[in-house]
Image (cartoon, rainbow, N blue to C red; front, side, top):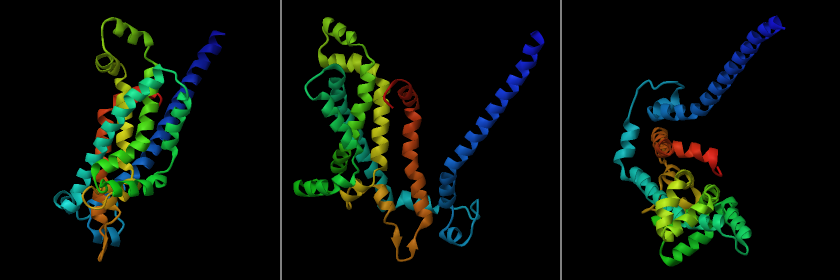
Length: 284
């Protein structure tokens, strides 16, 4: 029996090493597949239009940063990033301010039609933005909000608030109700209890909800393009209107794409710990 066990153990170790190596190869290929478009976009952003159109090169032959200089010095380009950051930040703040008390109500109280209301909120997130483009356009044009940052921020609340409520409600259900009762017995009012005690307990959920609100608002194109023309036009809309008399400026467009990825990457970096906890504990 001892000899059989001794012979089986090295075989098991070899199989485990093979599985690990196979998994590493698959993961490496998957990451290369994901990073290839980003690398190619970066490669194009460092080339001239002549090189992009006339030759196939894995690396820039004539390295140039003129495309980035164009974006960072031309108000028609860099104001697109400013506009996007303004309305995305506004949307994230508004969505969380609305979703936090709503999620608390769904997690702590039961009232008539609560499940139906919760499902209705989620159906707004499921609906395509094209359904709401025309009503928002007509409404904002009538009340004078067309081509403003708050118009886009409020329009994005239609699908970000339900998402934030759904995420936060899952985190809040994990907090025992006894904490609320103990705080009230200690003399805490609801506002003080919610800010001082309850919100720190669900900080991971708030970070996850803020991340998804930011990202969904940042990448959304249809509503932001329909509801803006000049003053609040986002970078995503500007990138779709780059064709001129001389054709498409591929190098500038690629540089704009790289710079568009940067804010999302920074947000992911700063909330990465919250996202990991969200996947482990919350409704993500």
